[in-house]
Image 1 (cartoon, rainbow, N blue to C red):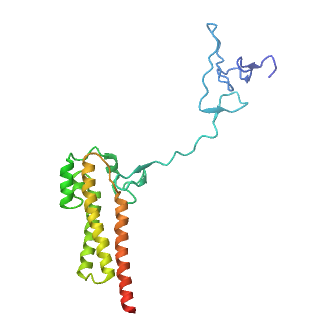
Image 2 (image 1 turned 45 degrees about the horizontal axis):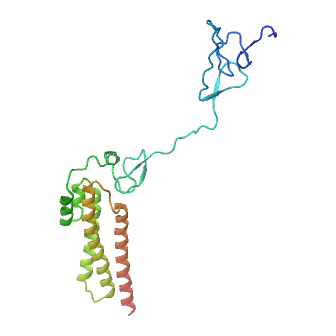
Length: 225
């Protein structure tokens, strides 16, 4: 193409084809102005033009994130962060639907009523305010710790090991009993758990293993004696 036939953009001077309506470098309009107004230069898009083509073909701008941040949903029971694709909590098995309900579906129970139910048996107050899983965890911990204390006491408190088991588990049972009553009243007033159920589950496991270890130590000591 000769210099006389060359067509250039009036805004940036880039070489363009004879039938181009837009400049491939600066996106300025190449249409003839019918009313003497200046050509409108549009705002650049999210992609940058390919240099030197004059055809307006664009390529994605480098540096854009290729993947979005991993989404998660928090478990309302143990507060574990679960992948958004998970249907139940990976730690305690709470359904995803319960996390979506939040606290809006909690039954309207007075703090006094929730506390009274919990004093009858730990966990009933949590169930009354719409948190049965948390109530179940507290009920199980109470029954297990109290049961171990009773069995150890039945075996005789003359042994130092059995006496230690009785004291530890009886203290744990009383603590769960008091904690459940306080938590139930707090939940009825719109508050949160004082101790996460996940923590109580670990306490339950630790208590069982500790009791077994104490009994094992006592048996070994008696055998050597």
